[in-house]
Length: 343
Image (cartoon, rainbow, N blue to C red; front, side, top):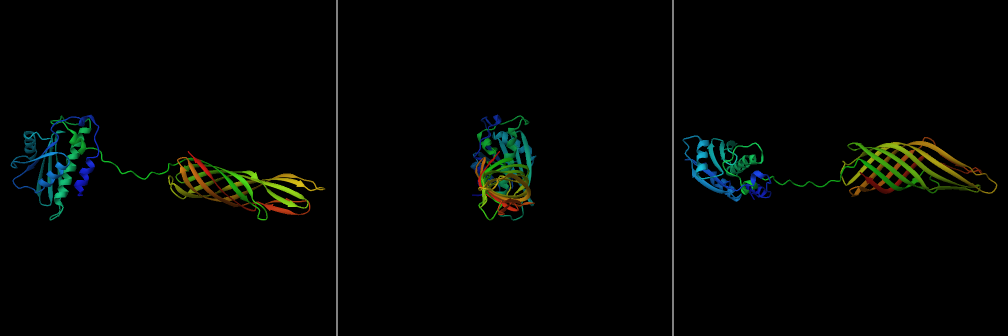
């Protein structure tokens, strides 16, 4: 299909709802003027206008007078909604249109390279576009008194062209709340702890987020010796800055970040017979690095996997009465899979 054919196919898709295009009248008739030396473009322009639904007449024009006056006289005589005249010159073509629908005459100069093979197609395209641009004035409140009322064919010509739909992106969410069960490891000679990770992320600039994190102890780690046992529960609360690697709105994205956190260790001793038990709360602080990957499940729901690791400024030691000890918090990491709710 030629460029003109594609253009006219698009123009047929819409219907203008403006009251000005609701009239019926002579707007479907278009006159093409032909001087003593035809430009050679008349037949191509006629074919394209007829394909758009117009009734087209080719009539001779007296070139001794003013083209504007001659076009107006011819269009009134034939009761046409518009009259078109193409005049060839060296290297360009003059396109004259007397538009009786909007009450004006327009002129356009189209540059044509000498010997161009597609000159007729190019001039026909420029003519249809100029006619459409002239007719568009009927959709405004500022227009001249109409000699001819526009009808449905004019409406189709000036109808808005359909836009291509862009791929839908996930909405950008400013606040996110994360909940996930997390394995917390800060001791490598015993079982890890199980915590509940809670996160609040606030996007404040493009791909940057302020991240508030917390670990709530669920399942403790146990330290045992002949002198008894101790249950150690871990918790944390921190603040950091996250950077989204993918732009907001993507359905699969990763991020990385860093921050500072306080680590809490609640120790509850259970002594064997003959020993005394103790309870204690130990606190240390630690910088951390964070990385995560998430995928959008629904508009406000995402699935996320997290890895956080850090080095405590001091470690926490659990000492048993018989001299046995265990150390927590010097190097630690946590990893979890959970859900993120975004708004």
